[in-house]
Image 1 (cartoon, rainbow, N blue to C red):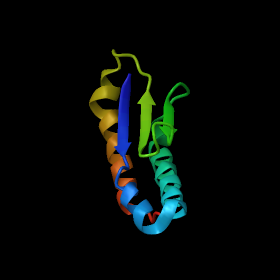
Image 2: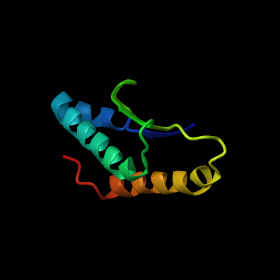
Image 3: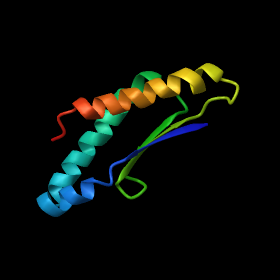
Image 4: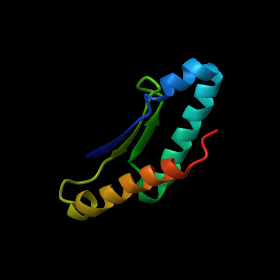
Length: 93
């Protein structure tokens, strides 16, 4: 099993300055971007969880065999880079 956690705790500052509605809209955008970025790598048993842990994280859980060396050595880095790149380029509204 592997897990990628996207920390969105900086959204708390957004909530203070723009209210809960603005923060919720951006949080949904972050969730959508994370899901879109990792969807090419997801298998049927994998999970993407957002907002369930407290709203400040997005968690991607991959259920792979520990023998799947290629996934852990190569693909996991690709997924992480895809998420970071997508969040860096996304117009969060």
